[in-house]
Image (cartoon, rainbow, N blue to C red; front, side, top):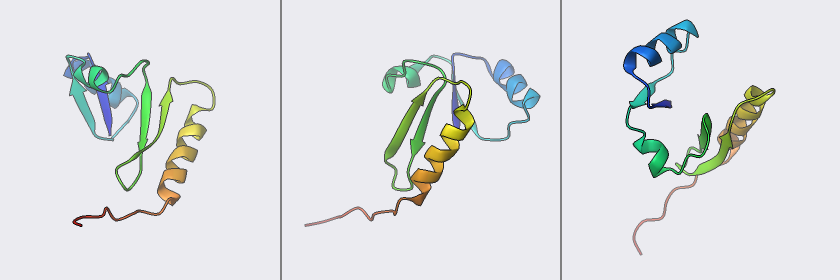
Length: 88
């Protein structure tokens, strides 16, 4: 899932089509997501584990970024899931 910030649907759609991306993309035309999560750079990649906990935050993009993201996702997926405790 991606969140595109401060762009129109037309611009985002054209970008996704031109790169043949098929993942789900949410639009945040006002930038409230970046404000709420204190995003300081774009792109910001947030790896969330199966347990819903943020495992890693990667800011920026450069040589080797794809492998860094793949390793972070693999590490998050390899971690065991924990069942939240409920009740007393």
